[in-house]
Length: 90
Image (cartoon, rainbow, N blue to C red; front, side):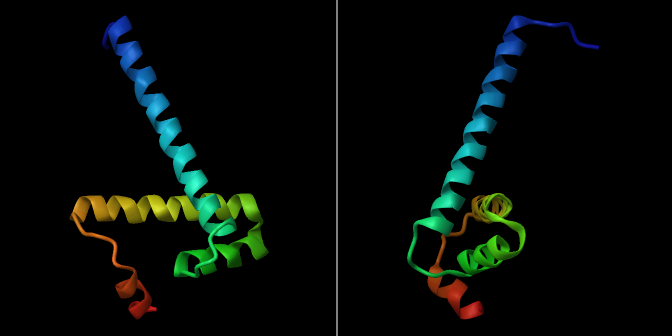
């Protein structure tokens, strides 16, 4: 078992604050994607179908999770987003 230190506690608080900020940013991005953008995309049409069946809040959370997975894969692979390729695969 590890002993308690204030340095470790502060480090954990910073990490939790960062996670909160990331979740809030992803939620805001998903909400903007669904509610404010006029351009169509596969993610937006999927999210709009979820809004009709599950409700707005659940749909926004689902789109935020999908964006998180997409961003993580792009970061891990080092690839750039190319909307033309996404539309071609549809």
